[in-house]
Length: 434
Image (cartoon, rainbow, N blue to C red; front, side, top):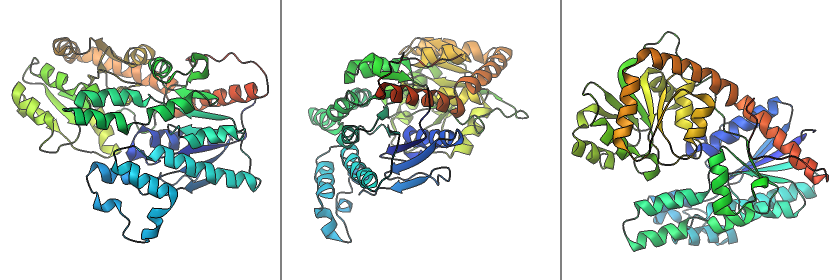
């Protein structure tokens, strides 16, 4: 099947620090360009780092009102220069919707992207395929209606985040806010109507089918990628034999951080936990640690740069992923790429990830005692940890490098284009891992 010659990515947020979608966009676009596919990018703020490998990178500004709403900077939501710009239809929509608690960004960006690409099409530009990165706004469906092949990536549907938000909610008013915030109706509508959905695990594929109503044969699991040059073992470095590392957000119930704190209380006093998370003094993590009597064995790093994160992975004897749900499990992959074994919970996509690359143990979720037993088993077996870390590093590089993910993604593009030509394909939800 022939690959496309030219594609266009559309992504409503592009910076690597704004979430996995920014990392996905930058590295996948780079690898596809290395394969000889011409890549154009249309992206919203926060914008990505320079993309010299792209044929073009068009930035579509917005007011970034979602951030101001969450920080309650309501005055900052009003423009202090060119106030008339607030009356432009999409700007006015974003202002009103954001002030009422809606996530307005995907809808507004999708319409701006539709208008920008339509102008370029009318001027004679052509793309073989459009690749949306997790926006799924009505404008993306509009591009499909123009006759363009359109695919989208969903690492996990927003319905997962909404369920986690309901767990955090403390009042009926909070629950109403959660119901209003997530544009699940729009995203599921668009997901069911475009050519293909790419995702990163069989677990995510099943959730997309159940929550968004997408037919299983329209979903392709292309896995997720990692910069295996950056995330790599330190051949000359020494492990801290008493250090456990976790990368997660205590504010997200799905990450299971409270269970890990309770597990730490059941572990020998020599073992210490480093948590890469928000270190604000009012974070619940400090209250949980005080209640469990382990405050003196916990270090919360705050936000760290990627080089420091790699150093922490390399230094730790063991990484722990206590999540109650993961659509993929990137911290587990990052740790194993650095040669550090993992104890993870049997939840979401973590079992299939651990089966693919090995590198550790699975324990039951929501069970601090089982978590403690698994951690202690590996902490007491340094030779086994070294063996697991080395094996996992090799398999992560084989299956989850961006080079590999880009090749499987290009196969998915070719399937879509063959379908468009009227040729049947044998699309499966799983990417080959051979």
